[in-house]
Image 1 (tube, rainbow, N blue to C red):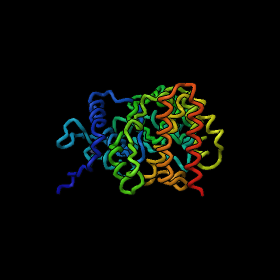
Image 2: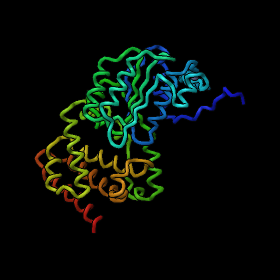
Image 3: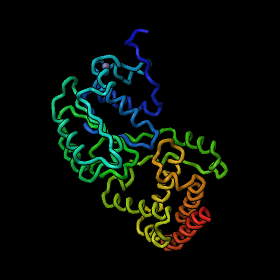
Image 4: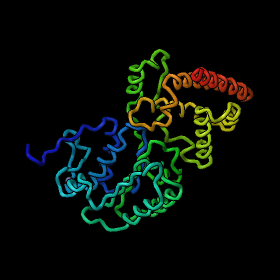
Length: 329
Ligand SMILES: [Zn+2]
């Protein structure tokens, strides 16, 4: 095999439409300056980002065999080789150390983006786990997003878009990666036999986060963060029922959040390499029971009038509490 022939790794099929769009934008010179790739761990965020960053920096991009509307890097030009060896001068990777990404890293990226490209046309920055930016870092990034320098492309990855400043999200072109989670996850769940008997349906709507108010409205976003923290604290035995009940009654979105957070926790159980914090304490069986109780509660509430909400929420909290207590005893 001649050295310039590269075997294209098989990309996940659900990334194709995003690749087509980005290829088109690249060809037409209308790529966004900031791209946010959002999806659960294992959805292929890094895969999509690396495909794009290699494409942008390659000197001889070419169509993928049999997929003429998707371009890819050649794999053998000087830029491709330097990128592979992680010594390409026009690209910068920002990976959070431990739990946060600080303001100095973002400032470094900002000045990096302002310099002229050495080899290629673009200056590119990849920010992995963008939700781990500190407040100061996020504010520094916001300035860059507001006044992007020519030919700079920032790619942010996150599995927790709710934890990003809505002002940052609104300045990025968001790609919500929605893998065939329904099938894959149900497969994983029935393999481990913890959900098949209950017949719980996991549907893709939970991953479609684009329209949710907590992403576009700062106050709702803060309320979501507070609710999430309270719920997790409760699950970890650091909050009592009445406090969770209050949270549940405080926001019109709280029931949906309860459902969404629980299904995400459940999902994390089946993804290798997810954050282990919640995984150790909460078992799939517990989360599965919780999820059932919560969707039942939500169904009941939807069929009731507003006046009964408090009562149904109290019932729901009691049912949740029963599940937690059964686990402990
Ligand atoms: Zn190349």
